[in-house]
Image (cartoon, rainbow, N blue to C red; front, top):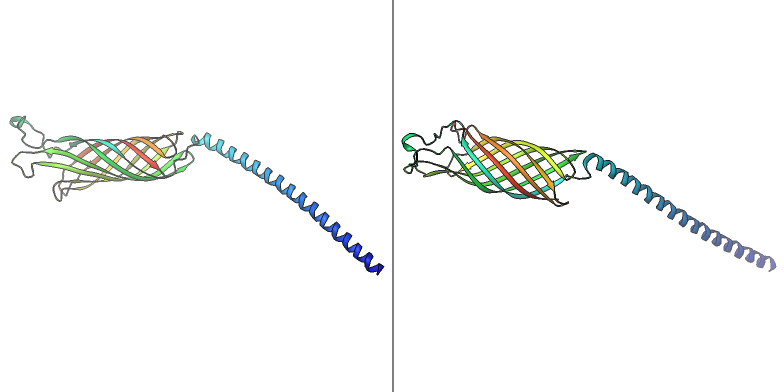
Length: 237
Protein backbone atom coordinates (compact mmCIF):
# COMPACT_ATOMS: atom_id res chain seq x y z
CA UNK A 1 0.00 0.00 0.00
CA UNK A 2 2.82 2.33 0.81
CA UNK A 3 4.43 1.58 -2.47
CA UNK A 4 1.21 2.27 -4.22
CA UNK A 5 0.80 5.46 -2.22
CA UNK A 6 4.34 6.50 -2.95
CA UNK A 7 3.79 5.62 -6.56
CA UNK A 8 0.56 7.57 -6.58
CA UNK A 9 2.26 10.46 -4.86
CA UNK A 10 5.12 10.25 -7.34
CA UNK A 11 2.64 10.06 -10.22
CA UNK A 12 0.72 13.03 -8.83
CA UNK A 13 3.91 15.03 -8.35
CA UNK A 14 5.10 14.06 -11.83
CA UNK A 15 1.82 15.02 -13.43
CA UNK A 16 1.74 18.30 -11.49
CA UNK A 17 5.33 19.02 -12.54
CA UNK A 18 4.49 18.16 -16.16
CA UNK A 19 1.45 20.45 -16.32
CA UNK A 20 3.37 23.18 -14.53
CA UNK A 21 6.22 22.91 -17.04
CA UNK A 22 3.70 22.73 -19.89
CA UNK A 23 2.02 25.90 -18.65
CA UNK A 24 5.41 27.60 -18.41
CA UNK A 25 6.34 26.43 -21.90
CA UNK A 26 2.99 27.58 -23.30
CA UNK A 27 3.40 30.95 -21.62
CA UNK A 28 6.93 31.25 -23.00
CA UNK A 29 5.71 30.13 -26.44
CA UNK A 30 2.94 32.75 -26.41
CA UNK A 31 5.41 35.46 -25.40
CA UNK A 32 7.87 34.41 -28.09
CA UNK A 33 5.07 34.18 -30.67
CA UNK A 34 3.83 37.62 -29.71
CA UNK A 35 7.32 39.05 -29.95
CA UNK A 36 7.81 37.37 -33.33
CA UNK A 37 4.53 38.75 -34.60
CA UNK A 38 5.44 42.23 -33.40
CA UNK A 39 8.85 41.95 -35.04
CA UNK A 40 7.28 40.66 -38.25
CA UNK A 41 4.73 43.48 -38.23
CA UNK A 42 7.48 46.06 -37.73
CA UNK A 43 9.55 44.52 -40.51
CA UNK A 44 6.52 44.46 -42.84
CA UNK A 45 5.70 48.07 -42.02
CA UNK A 46 9.30 49.13 -42.65
CA UNK A 47 9.34 47.21 -45.93
CA UNK A 48 6.04 48.82 -46.92
CA UNK A 49 7.36 52.28 -46.03
CA UNK A 50 10.53 51.58 -47.99
CA UNK A 51 8.52 50.36 -50.99
CA UNK A 52 6.24 53.37 -50.69
CA UNK A 53 9.20 55.74 -50.63
CA UNK A 54 10.68 53.99 -53.67
CA UNK A 55 7.35 54.13 -55.48
CA UNK A 56 6.96 57.78 -54.51
CA UNK A 57 10.39 58.62 -55.86
CA UNK A 58 9.61 56.75 -59.06
CA UNK A 59 6.02 57.74 -59.83
CA UNK A 60 5.04 60.35 -57.26
CA UNK A 61 3.15 57.72 -55.26
CA UNK A 62 0.26 57.74 -57.75
CA UNK A 63 -1.29 54.60 -59.22
CA UNK A 64 -3.04 55.04 -62.59
CA UNK A 65 -3.81 51.37 -63.23
CA UNK A 66 -7.39 50.23 -63.66
CA UNK A 67 -10.60 50.77 -65.58
CA UNK A 68 -12.20 54.19 -66.00
CA UNK A 69 -15.23 55.69 -67.70
CA UNK A 70 -16.73 59.13 -68.03
CA UNK A 71 -18.02 61.93 -70.22
CA UNK A 72 -17.18 65.39 -71.37
CA UNK A 73 -17.89 68.41 -73.52
CA UNK A 74 -16.20 68.57 -76.91
CA UNK A 75 -15.68 71.37 -79.39
CA UNK A 76 -15.26 70.20 -82.98
CA UNK A 77 -13.99 72.06 -86.04
CA UNK A 78 -14.29 70.52 -89.54
CA UNK A 79 -12.77 71.38 -92.89
CA UNK A 80 -12.85 69.93 -96.39
CA UNK A 81 -9.14 69.38 -97.04
CA UNK A 82 -9.29 68.61 -100.76
CA UNK A 83 -12.10 71.19 -101.34
CA UNK A 84 -14.23 68.61 -103.13
CA UNK A 85 -17.02 70.44 -101.33
CA UNK A 86 -16.00 73.80 -102.80
CA UNK A 87 -16.31 76.88 -100.59
CA UNK A 88 -18.79 79.62 -101.46
CA UNK A 89 -17.19 81.94 -104.02
CA UNK A 90 -18.12 84.49 -106.67
CA UNK A 91 -21.80 85.07 -107.28
CA UNK A 92 -22.78 82.56 -104.62
CA UNK A 93 -21.19 84.54 -101.75
CA UNK A 94 -23.88 85.52 -99.28
CA UNK A 95 -26.61 83.59 -101.15
CA UNK A 96 -26.18 80.20 -99.51
CA UNK A 97 -25.03 78.53 -102.72
CA UNK A 98 -22.66 75.57 -102.98
CA UNK A 99 -21.12 73.77 -100.01
CA UNK A 100 -19.73 75.47 -96.94
CA UNK A 101 -16.43 73.66 -96.60
CA UNK A 102 -16.05 73.98 -92.85
CA UNK A 103 -18.12 73.83 -89.71
CA UNK A 104 -17.88 73.74 -85.92
CA UNK A 105 -20.00 72.50 -83.07
CA UNK A 106 -20.23 71.76 -79.35
CA UNK A 107 -21.04 68.17 -78.48
CA UNK A 108 -21.19 65.63 -75.67
CA UNK A 109 -18.71 62.77 -75.42
CA UNK A 110 -18.51 59.40 -73.67
CA UNK A 111 -15.39 57.32 -73.09
CA UNK A 112 -14.22 54.10 -71.45
CA UNK A 113 -10.69 52.79 -71.05
CA UNK A 114 -8.07 50.85 -69.12
CA UNK A 115 -4.61 51.87 -67.91
CA UNK A 116 -1.69 49.70 -66.82
CA UNK A 117 1.28 51.32 -65.06
CA UNK A 118 4.93 50.23 -65.29
CA UNK A 119 6.98 52.39 -62.92
CA UNK A 120 6.45 55.90 -64.36
CA UNK A 121 5.06 54.77 -67.73
CA UNK A 122 1.33 54.24 -68.22
CA UNK A 123 -0.01 52.34 -71.23
CA UNK A 124 -3.68 51.96 -72.00
CA UNK A 125 -6.51 51.58 -74.47
CA UNK A 126 -9.57 53.78 -74.85
CA UNK A 127 -12.78 53.96 -76.90
CA UNK A 128 -14.90 57.09 -77.19
CA UNK A 129 -18.07 58.37 -78.84
CA UNK A 130 -18.90 62.00 -79.68
CA UNK A 131 -22.47 62.94 -80.56
CA UNK A 132 -22.06 65.66 -83.18
CA UNK A 133 -24.57 67.86 -85.04
CA UNK A 134 -22.18 69.69 -87.33
CA UNK A 135 -23.47 70.92 -90.69
CA UNK A 136 -21.94 71.41 -94.12
CA UNK A 137 -24.58 73.66 -95.71
CA UNK A 138 -25.48 73.30 -99.39
CA UNK A 139 -27.79 74.87 -102.01
CA UNK A 140 -31.40 75.22 -100.81
CA UNK A 141 -32.55 73.23 -103.87
CA UNK A 142 -30.26 70.33 -102.96
CA UNK A 143 -31.73 67.27 -101.28
CA UNK A 144 -31.05 66.97 -98.38
CA UNK A 145 -30.72 70.67 -97.53
CA UNK A 146 -27.59 70.08 -95.47
CA UNK A 147 -24.96 67.46 -94.73
CA UNK A 148 -24.76 66.70 -91.01
CA UNK A 149 -21.92 64.91 -89.25
CA UNK A 150 -23.87 62.88 -86.70
CA UNK A 151 -21.14 61.16 -84.71
CA UNK A 152 -17.47 60.43 -84.31
CA UNK A 153 -16.13 57.29 -82.65
CA UNK A 154 -12.58 56.11 -82.09
CA UNK A 155 -10.54 53.26 -80.62
CA UNK A 156 -7.08 54.35 -79.53
CA UNK A 157 -3.94 53.30 -77.67
CA UNK A 158 -2.45 55.66 -75.09
CA UNK A 159 1.06 56.14 -73.72
CA UNK A 160 1.59 58.41 -70.74
CA UNK A 161 4.20 59.36 -68.17
CA UNK A 162 3.17 59.71 -64.53
CA UNK A 163 4.10 62.96 -62.78
CA UNK A 164 2.36 62.25 -59.51
CA UNK A 165 -1.25 63.38 -59.91
CA UNK A 166 -0.61 64.54 -63.49
CA UNK A 167 -0.51 62.20 -66.49
CA UNK A 168 0.49 63.75 -69.83
CA UNK A 169 -0.05 61.31 -72.72
CA UNK A 170 -0.07 60.79 -76.46
CA UNK A 171 -2.72 58.73 -78.22
CA UNK A 172 -3.57 57.33 -81.64
CA UNK A 173 -5.81 54.85 -83.42
CA UNK A 174 -8.70 54.45 -85.83
CA UNK A 175 -11.88 56.52 -86.13
CA UNK A 176 -15.34 56.18 -87.64
CA UNK A 177 -17.77 58.96 -88.64
CA UNK A 178 -21.43 58.92 -89.67
CA UNK A 179 -23.65 61.49 -91.38
CA UNK A 180 -27.35 62.01 -92.03
CA UNK A 181 -26.92 60.64 -95.59
CA UNK A 182 -27.26 56.87 -95.89
CA UNK A 183 -23.98 55.32 -96.99
CA UNK A 184 -21.97 58.50 -96.45
CA UNK A 185 -19.82 57.26 -93.57
CA UNK A 186 -16.38 55.82 -93.22
CA UNK A 187 -13.16 55.09 -91.37
CA UNK A 188 -10.22 57.37 -90.74
CA UNK A 189 -7.22 57.81 -88.49
CA UNK A 190 -6.93 59.85 -85.30
CA UNK A 191 -4.09 61.04 -83.09
CA UNK A 192 -3.57 63.56 -80.36
CA UNK A 193 -2.26 64.60 -76.96
CA UNK A 194 -3.75 65.24 -73.56
CA UNK A 195 -3.23 65.47 -69.83
CA UNK A 196 -5.16 63.94 -66.93
CA UNK A 197 -5.22 65.26 -63.37
CA UNK A 198 -6.16 62.94 -60.51
CA UNK A 199 -8.48 64.93 -58.23
CA UNK A 200 -8.59 61.99 -55.81
CA UNK A 201 -8.43 58.19 -56.00
CA UNK A 202 -11.80 58.08 -57.80
CA UNK A 203 -12.15 61.13 -60.06
CA UNK A 204 -9.86 62.28 -62.87
CA UNK A 205 -10.22 65.58 -64.73
CA UNK A 206 -8.70 65.74 -68.20
CA UNK A 207 -8.16 67.80 -71.34
CA UNK A 208 -7.56 66.20 -74.72
CA UNK A 209 -6.93 67.32 -78.28
CA UNK A 210 -7.58 64.91 -81.16
CA UNK A 211 -7.14 65.44 -84.89
CA UNK A 212 -9.04 63.19 -87.32
CA UNK A 213 -8.44 62.58 -91.01
CA UNK A 214 -10.91 60.85 -93.36
CA UNK A 215 -9.51 60.31 -96.86
CA UNK A 216 -12.12 58.02 -98.38
CA UNK A 217 -15.46 58.96 -96.91
CA UNK A 218 -18.31 56.63 -97.85
CA UNK A 219 -16.46 55.34 -100.91
CA UNK A 220 -16.27 58.87 -102.33
CA UNK A 221 -12.73 60.35 -102.53
CA UNK A 222 -13.57 63.16 -100.14
CA UNK A 223 -10.88 64.14 -97.62
CA UNK A 224 -12.13 65.80 -94.46
CA UNK A 225 -10.23 66.82 -91.34
CA UNK A 226 -11.73 67.28 -87.90
CA UNK A 227 -10.12 68.83 -84.81
CA UNK A 228 -11.72 68.01 -81.45
CA UNK A 229 -10.87 69.64 -78.12
CA UNK A 230 -12.42 67.78 -75.18
CA UNK A 231 -12.79 68.55 -71.45
CA UNK A 232 -13.54 65.30 -69.60
CA UNK A 233 -14.37 63.89 -66.18
CA UNK A 234 -13.64 60.21 -65.48
CA UNK A 235 -14.39 57.82 -62.65
CA UNK A 236 -11.59 55.34 -61.90
CA UNK A 237 -12.21 51.78 -60.67
